[in-house]
Length: 119
Image (cartoon, rainbow, N blue to C red):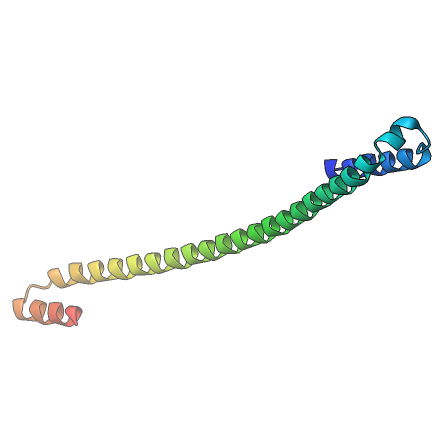
């Protein structure tokens, strides 16, 4: 149980006790002060409850947004890793082709194949 609800319970109990014992001398003496202070206390506690509930919903929506951003970043990282691995594989293929071209003894043929690899 949160402290706001506990405070409301204490205030309600105090109001009931004041009504029951209103014939008492002290209660009659301070009755006008209690008519001012009790509603003010109730309003303060209720406003705190409303503000607390408002921040809880903002926190929940913020957590959902952060989770969504994390998921998007994870997906982007996976896509990037796949693209990098594909580029490395293509580069390895190019290096292998270059090694094969280097083995050619004929210089004209070697230059023709190197030019074909560049295009």
